[in-house]
Image (cartoon, rainbow, N blue to C red; front, side, top):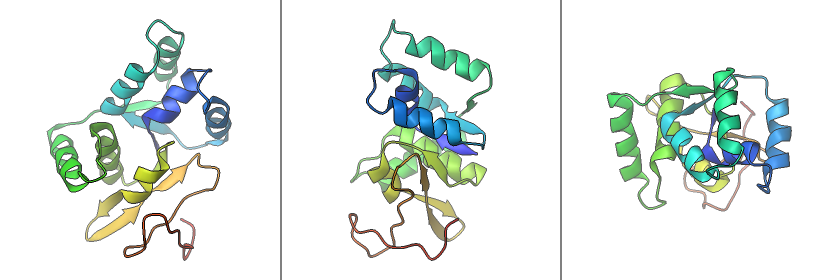
Length: 161
C-alpha cells in the first residue's frame, strides 16, 4: 500500500496545478493500492478550488476504488497528537501526523507526496527502530537521511527497500 498526501491529490485533480503532469505520470506507473487518511482528504478538499471540477473528480476516484480512505480512531488520534508534539519544531500538521500513524499501523513506508523535506525527516516507529519513508513521485527518488547527518545532506542507502 502507498499512502497519498494532500499535495498529489490536489495536483491530480486540478489540471492547472504545476505538479499535475508529473503526478499523473507517477500515478500511471503505480501498481500498488493507494490509500489516504481522513485528515489528508479534508486538507485536499479544502485546497481544491470549491466549485471547480476537482472535488467531484476526487469524489468519483474514491467511489470507484482508486483511493482507499483510512479512518483515524482514538488510538491513532493519540498517536497523531504525540507525533505533532514530537515534530513541533518542523512543525508537523495533523494530516502529516495521520500519514505517519497510518504507516506505522499498516506497516508500510511508501508515501506519495510533494512534501519531500518533511517526509524525509519523519520516521516510522517499528518497535525500537525508526524507519525512514520511501518517497514516491520524487524525480530524484527516495532520500535517505541517517541520524547525525545534517537535514540537507543525503547519504547513499546500503540497499534499496
